[in-house]
Image 1 (cartoon, rainbow, N blue to C red):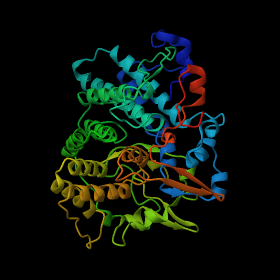
Image 2: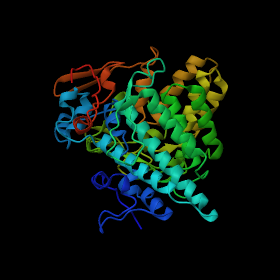
Image 3: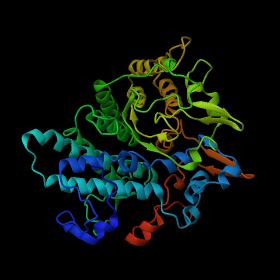
Image 4: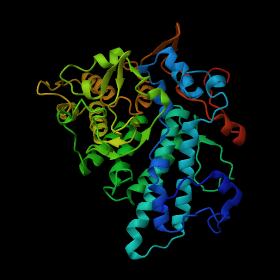
Length: 453
């Protein structure tokens, strides 16, 4: 049996008794472990697509588009994210896709978490019960984290108790009014869900669209990196790599293929994607300086990019198709562990991880990086992180945290139709506007983006 999205309208009409009585003969209500697992496995319609990373990636500055392409974009929010538009002009009446889709997934995880607690598993069902609950917790934390990267300020410990966070919906009843939490409470919820899922999930998944203990370790590493808690980030990256450390040798891939990377490759730990029309290869043009940073012997130069009439475009996602990969993979973990080692003075270990990764990306002419200087090691690792994880939905988060450091902060600039647009480090527009319909219906406060809203 396959379950699609359970509509909020159905839930709103049923209140807390919706799972106890079917509201309509045509509505299929999940009741068994198999039902809940089927809902979780609805990956092509719900849990593994449209993750809330797209608008941030649009604004992250690694590509440009022609004015004609910008004009042809389907949605206002794509055009606005590209120019870091002011709040009042951002959505123009549209639903925020990233916000709405993430909260629909969160609602479904809450439904599953409520329903599974009503099931008393037999001994031979316990593993399945644990995986359903652990998966729901993982998906909820994944979506809260992605939302926080776009709709909350970057995590800064000194202000996290006061900076506005997300509405933390952890109940399946949509009639409960939930206000905004703090940034600290938002990250606390993400971490709590993930750490609980670690005690429930299998070490490795039956399918890469399903969460696993390795995926929970990997996501914890990503979360702690965003928080700039580098000792914890490095620890969890190492824990994930202890389970499965494999890397692809890019020399085995064919640059002549339309999409050189297969879906569910050996590096992929957890599969998830995001997509907007602006990322279409017919529109997206890679910034020339970024493309030039890949040397001739680097296989990524030919596997990630292809030439169009107007410049270089990107086609190297781990999704295996036109959608961008936003999931979890071992190459990210090597870079997290390398960065954290560099930041904590373990330079030799940091360079070992970096060189082990890069050897699989280069031809036989690769010369390993060598340095004993922690600052130089960190500089090299961050440059390679940008190149390796390009168009993975991570650059926006990296910019937000690295803008706190004078050594690595950058100013983003785009030109469109003769006008120049700029995003300075620390600009309030590094936080996106909350969905207008959410503001109207719930009454929560809009983000302060320095433009008077």
